[in-house]
Length: 419
Length: 170
Image: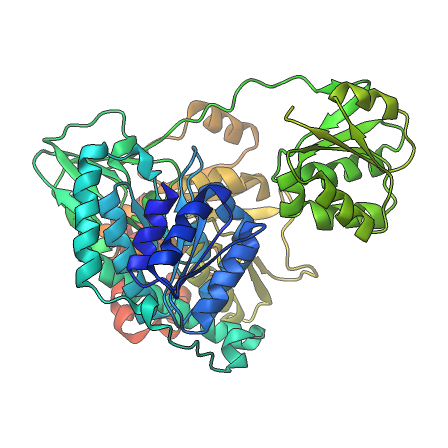
């Protein structure tokens, strides 16, 4: 899945790709054999991946970062700022939708162009178009793509592979040229203080309007008017059912909204059903008198009872990777007498847990942190020693955590597995 | 909406009153809602506390519900909606709080005039018909002329007058 995505990016000239998903490494490495000047990195977390890719684009190189839709929210800080700094080289933020979480609200929220692609061909078009828009208007472009393994079967993959071969031979490969990066000093842009941010804000608004005009003619937006009842959706594949012979506007460019295209479609029908999970398209439609917006319902599950382990109040990573550390620290500070155990995972610890742990250590917290490990226990111990912390213990099984239920100092336990 | 609050503030100032408008910038462009707190007369804080506002201008029905907490008992709300009636339980609550509501289809008025995005001006027009000083039609019209860009002035005045007519007709 990610290999296919990375290949399409590289074939469109992305010289540097940053990702966080270890599953993509094999594919990226194989691309290096084919494209000698292609560079990739697997980063510890999404913020790092985004900032690295962004800096390449500052230096005039085409780059991309490959994240999950959930991961996009971990990179919100640089993502928001990048709308104002803009880029020079093309920069695509590719978010792969691996679960129910959609990143479409980030388009209007961050004021970055957002394209949704739900097939391999749609993704390929979106990448080519996205890089063009990104370089013409000097802005990152977000592309959300469904997992390509959900795409049509191997039969069509053969067809796709031949298309790739044909395209690979027929298009120029900027990646192979290894042109040097070029960064032009301009503190008013790259390090703008509030006074200059105001000017950048006006420039951003102007860019958005010009990109809106570009989106009017994008091939990925497909309108068919046949009946007086219409459907507008960013992804037809997620609809439970719809009348294929009816009026349908498949809208790939959800932000900024191509108003003439959408308004023209709405004018030609009597009623429009708008299918999206968040009101991204809906809120951009000025006249919604004909629009019936159906928000997809989520099941948040039943309320689970509070978890306890050997009398200790269990805190899990509900707010994000390694968030249990901060949450446990907060609970402990508020209720020093409560016995608390935070549970996280080794990858999460490296993702976001290190600064959280340092904060906990510095502020003298005293809960038990259980890190479920896989292969990196020794590395974790090294990191903790680097923080000046030695009170960690290896457990053969989680049940041994009972020994530490009355610990009155910050304690870290390592145990292999998942709970 | 920010234009509407600016017009209200500057109309009051032009009439010789002290006025301020506290706005939330940016969220309207990012898919969020915007609240503007306009105060006129003698005051120290620029903010309006819970149930302290005399008038609530809601440019969308959902925003009315969201900001109802600012409106005092006995206050007045003007709501941009095409509905004839609000839900029964809401109407009951408003009666309990002695809140008067005026409903106006600002979107419909502005759309009819070919500029749906100026529904806020239609609401101001309606508001000007209520006889609440200093917000007479003449005063607000003057501010609209000063505040809006040249090519939009005529259309804005047309929509303002259509909103005012609606108010006078009620």
